[in-house]
Amino acid sequence: MNPRVLFIDDEIHVLDAYRRSLRDFRSTWEMTFVDCPVKAWEMIRTEMYDTIVTDVYMPRLGGLELLKRLRREERTKDIPVIVVTGEADRTLKRQALDLDATDLLPKPVDQEVLRVRLRNALRMRRNELELRREKELLEQRVRERTLELTASRLDIIWRLGKAAEFRDEETGNHVVRVACHARAIAARMGCDREFVDDLLLAAPLHDIGKIGIPDSILLKPGPLDDDERQQMRRHCEMGASILTDDCRLLDVAWQHAAGPFGSMDPLPPSPVLKMAAAVALGHHERWNGSGYPFGLSGTDIPLAARIVAVADVYDALRSRRPYKEPFPVEQALAIIDRGAGEDFDPAVVDAFLACFGEIHETERRFSDASATHVREVAHDQPALR
Image (cartoon, rainbow, N blue to C red):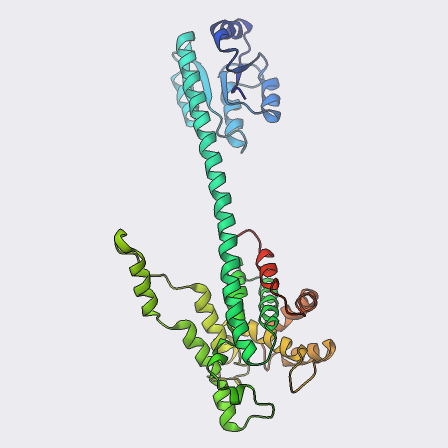
């Protein structure tokens, strides 16, 4: 497609001179000549041009006002504009440059100079469009790669959480439901996008510490005695330890991966793992200080842990266990509601109840084990962004 050039001047003889001077370029440039600046502006608003040549002094709409309008519009702000001015118009020249005029041509216009300036402006426009296309392509590739990485991270984290749940004879979908419930609650509370997205990844690891609990306790069909209960409660600290370990061996491997390319910067701490550690450690703490492992209360409990506490308890109430049948929805909701201000952060409970339609849909959607569930959750994420 040939580049398009728009010439604007209220004097017909000037436009005729442009036509004669540029007749050799008719096969390579699509040129439009307009003697009414108002009409030209209407054309610019509906069509795209690659370069504009405009006079300054014109009735109804002067060249500088036209330039100002062009620079205000998102779709036209980068179009090269060559402004034709009188030789002595120093003030106008300065004003034109202040408005980001691409070039200035003195009157009377030297037609050879005009041809050279037009070629330069069109070359600049072509390069700018190519850079824009490359930028858009790169951004698209980054978005696609980010989505792939997000899905991959979620897949790995979900499977780690599922491994802990399998040892407890629970379905792996428990961690998916808790993660989705937590995300819905956080979003309803108005938490920022980064927090909500990180929580979706961190929540499935809330019980990862159960990996360190002996089967004799974890799988015991009857009530736990005091000693067993204390050991079971250690899963919070075990989970936090798993998720906050310094991982020196990983740093060594990371440095080794640099090979002949030299040293690499240390691995940055993962905000998701940091949040996951806080969730693992604090999701059994209670608003009134009656929880474990440290008896924290109120806002001393990290927000992510307070959110997961509600999501986890609700899903546990609604799930079948070897020692109980699932609670009806109404009964489970009543227990959560009664726990506000005692077991749970009242603001979290309010958000949970406010988004219960989404919570209930998550229960329905992820009620049966399926290997595709984690991919569905990942693909439901807004552009990763």
